[in-house]
Image (cartoon, protein in one colour):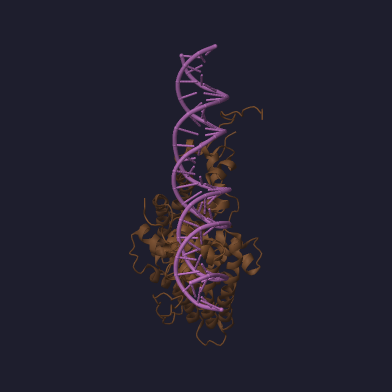
Length: 235
Length: 235
DNA sequence: GCTCCAATTCAACGAATGTTGAATCATGTG
DNA sequence: CACATGATTCAACATTCGTTGAATTGGAGC
């Protein structure tokens, strides 16, 4: 056993905390939030589990950091669409909401899982943070619906809070479940399950909330498949 | 420490395996599926953890048993509604689907959690079983939609598989999230959050799928709040 | 070249988990 | 009453988890 004692010190390349977050995101996406272990995250990041505790206070602090780098860009885009100055029709604005959601969340199952499950039950310290992040988003989308009523484009008796809930929530379900459930359940090809599902859903949703449900939807811009790069690593 | 050695044998009352399932259901509902431990279930049931392994082969076998006693009654009721002989209007039939779901799942967050999360990822052995249980339910609901199209009550271009997905899935979301999310997010009273949410949702959904979206819905029977008794303990 | 500090690794701790084997009791049957 | 059998408990097992303290290294500043 005379192999040399392994070097203990730092590797030539310093570990960027953001790279740990990338690894965490990937492991969360694969194993789920609770089942993801720090050891698995460390392995994915290529470092020792203890190093995570040097950069973050705890596992929960990693969640917070994940939320902190993912939500603000989403909120910023949503608030731009919700700004009263935006002259587009309500239908186009809501479809833009779908596109923004889609662009930011499609490639990030970890955040979806976080939003999905850990709101109801789970670490109590987390839910407060999620509230802080999600409430402004709800307000932005809801204001689009409120403006739509004022403009006479949406039915006057629309419950805008629940309408917001329906739109955002079903979007998550479509992203997470359609690609896996539909093929296994009904033998449907899953190639474009999400895109098809979102279009069918938006059509049904719009008929449900529009003042004139039979008026055809305007042409909708395509969904962009490319995920959003969270952080540009400079060369 | 001269306390007498505790009796090791069986308690005067035999432990019914169904009582263990009841306990499991309660603990799953409280802690979630993964976080629920056999020790917590045993404590809730008032027995030793090892006893669970006498009545069930493993933790997974408990899940199977839980599914086996919950799903058949739901399916039976749904298939009765989906029978082509049923003369009721499609709107009433779909509302009846909502009521059946509601009656059986409202008081059983454990099963909802099982349906919700463990389909996508998680124990692979489970998902097959869930498929076996869920597929017939999907078929029943979808056939209601198909019949609705044939009768001219639903829009001809309706995607019935996705329509089934939307109806059942949003129902689960409403049951689980509205009572906890809406009050915390928007200060809404949660007393009748679920009932209100379901009515608003069904109204929107029906407008989305109906051939004549502006025709008013027929009077809908009330939702029954009382949970279904799973097993009658004979006296 | 020496020193100090930030970054990293190693090894271990305590707690919790699913599971098992052996021991113990209760009860019905001969 | 003896005894077999089914039901229950105890104690322990091997893992895994989040977390921590000490040791070790590389590089920056003097």
